[in-house]
Length: 313
Ligand code: GLN
Image (cartoon, rainbow, N blue to C red; front, side, top):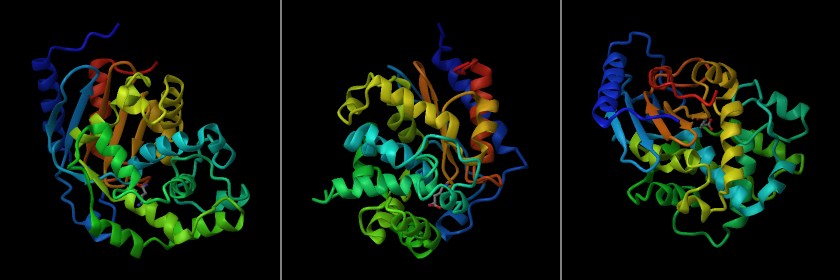
């Protein structure tokens, strides 16, 4: 059984990792498709750990909100599974794609059924389900509401400027959605579905908030907050499996090799990692590698898990 280091030693390890990241010269490049992401300083770097049953530990820019982007695909998947259960898998697959997150080629070969819920077309089908089920429009976007509930923090918000920029630059995502509409895999209005998707991508959270909001996955479904949304132990295990195999786009194999944990990344530079039965982790630094994963957030998670011996293997 894993014994966590005492909190003082744990804090030293986190501070040490962030200090080292500050001096890294290879920091990647911030996403450039919208100004709100392009303009974030590459010097930003934060990490937070939410152990089961213990307070959050963190270091660096861990309280600074950033754009969660594709990390929102975890939360939207929870909602869609809560709505339609296993019927979701008739419309979305469960295989890694090996292609970039916004690739169109594979979708045509596979007749409009996306490979998995963590690439854009898969998340757009998930948004279609959420849009259909939440017609009586709640005040808040349902994914925002879920993030707020899971983190027990109602200060979490959608950045409207990011949302407007996503809408303005979203032709490729709309193309994916129209293609799936043509194949009979989208039921609602494409604009409405893609706007729901862009809005969830535009949620901002800090590493501390993200670690808290994803801790239910480390708890293996034994989490009161998440069970209200239908997250049973089996469902939590399956979401973790999908994160392990598909959570970092076409670098998922490489991330599994380096970290050995279920992870989910976003082009805002955040990465979440789950240590089942122990803790959830979130790291952030805006510089990305060529596959769209944060260079330093991944390195920070790799370093922490190596030092603590955290892995599912
Ligand atoms: N908003 C981005 C997109 O849809 C999110 C992608 C990502 O984080 N990989 O292209």
